[in-house]
Length: 231
Image (cartoon, rainbow, N blue to C red; front, side, top):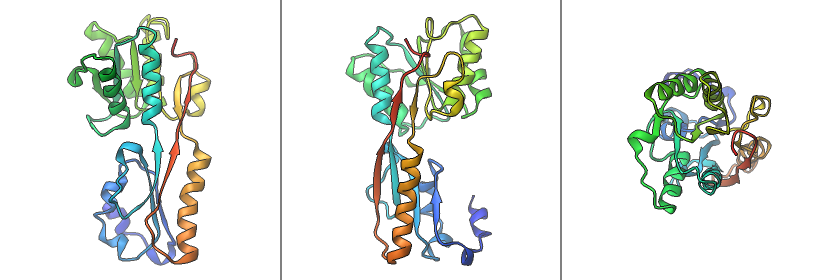
């Protein structure tokens, strides 16, 4: 990634917008970007927002909606919800939400057991779910890092005789187009992409037009979309 930015011809670039979730951590270490004094804005999750950062930020609040759907399951007696996603980042909004709801209900959360590491692709969701089935125990609820992992999870469950949501509830994040077309349609958390795009563009355009470098943070709420993959 660093090599990529070193190859940029900055004389043809007016501003930089980063939408990769963890890129803000790396950007602040890249002197070759800052020396050109370009407007820079990053998109981050709520848990990744840094009030001390000198980067412009558009912050997407997904934690509250993660809590809302997990509470929804707990309220229906499904108090065994696990997480499928990349890494073991305690600062991920989904994991923070899961731990928080377990605490609200005074239930023990076993990180090593209930967080299953997989990449963010469909095939990884399928493979990790298959390993889970082979282990002999499948939780009643699965929160996935994104819709692609959730799709792989649902496909694997159905092929192994599990019914969604009758046996297992599955939740995604992103609300991709395929999430509403799959069977069953996926409960997910939607990112309001138009609002995000407008916010990112407004920060950049304002800085280009005024010439003022003022650190700006804009917070945008996600939207909970309940479909048929949860009861």
